[in-house]
Amino acid sequence: MTTAGVLVAMATGTAAADGGGHGDPPPGAPGIGDPYYPLDGNGGYDVQHYGLDLRYDPASDVLAGTATITARATQSLSSFDLDLVGLEVRSVTVGGHPATWTREGQELVVTPAHPLHEHRRFTVEVAYDGVPETIQDELGGSGFFHTDDGAVVAGQPHGAATWFPANDHPRDAASVDVSVTVPEGLEGVSNGVLCGSWTTDGWTTWAWSAEEPMATYLVTLAVGEFDLRHYEADGILYWDAVDPAVATFDADPETEGPLAGEVIDATLARQPQIVEAAEGWFGPYPFSAAGAIVDDTPDLGFALETQTRPVYSPLFFSDPLLAETIVVHELAHQWYGDSVRLDAWQHIWLNEGFATYAEWLWLEHEGLDTPQGIFDNLASLTDEELGADFWQVVIGDPGPATDQLFHPAVYTRGAMTLQALRNQVGDDAFFSILREWASSMAGQTATTGQFIALAEAVSGQQLDELFTAWLFTPGRPAGLPEPVPAEAA
Image: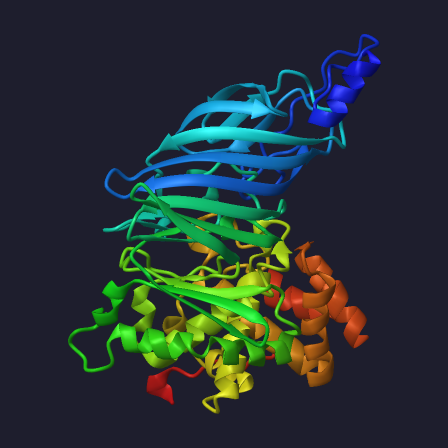
């Protein structure tokens, strides 16, 4: 390579093939290495930033976008993959130069004009369009939901690839800017901080920026008519986007109770109080922004901890206590799941068990119950009451099927595991473990083994027996009293 060629390569992040007869470097792997989802994510590079410039027309459901991806090669690459499901790719450039590409299932295989050298930063620009697909699996729909006036995205575990090209796995987090242009009169909402909005020729652009890196499944988009409320509390910027249509939504018309709009307003108003309580348990809130998205999407039967701006089904706002515990759950995920991310999906209990335990702490905060009381009540229930497989799911490694990955046992027994840990090590050590886990692992991926090691280091106790029983052994852990059937009580 000539000196001039080296300088060009350094400036663009690309390089010609190595000389000396060694040939081109290998392609990047089509998966990041998670055994549960072998083709999720990709090998050979680390994404540092996604810039998404989108245009969405609810009348046709067509999303047109340009994704600008800044990354660093972790090996020399002749080609690399991005995850992308459906959608039509119109052009791809790498380092400003046209690249070739092929489609192989969910893999968008990109071959730059010249191979990329290890450690080089490079920029990929993908122009694409189409109607994003909604994922259908054992739990129903997820990912990109089309609504009556727009769309909303809640895409765990791998829904990002349905609406932008991505390294779609929690192991590769990146900062994200989303600019979405929608018909005038509609709002476009995403993660982080609203940088501004402007209207031209009947279309309004909404620009959002999330500087703190996030996993791709935590990136969200909501388009439609929203009451967009902005406020600040304790240095945190909040944006709540609530579809006016949910104000009169009634999940259970046969019973008397407040309408969803009243419950939504009262519950979201308590977010700063919930964050303040959680900071006492877990340490400082990990991000600069917070808030919520509640869209009129009855098909969305769950909530998701999309970073800084969780998405909630309106179904949760039929009951004030249910609504509060769900909001507590998703806000707790900002520490455990968002800031501290999963290294692989088998460690899902580190997300869901911790967020469920936060619900128990909140009930104690409100004087309604205690974590030990909830633990004891669950331990007293029969298999018939809990579900025949409640004690059989190996929550430390539940398996990739969606109905196992998000099995209720992962949530509830995950929280019970934490209470068992608390009983073993005592309150002082327990809350030190929770805070140290959130602070020492902030912005990183985590495994169950790392959590066990930290718990042992902080408590000074050997905890293998406890975690083996609660996380990796089917059946009721030893020491729990056998439940008494109701008819025998």
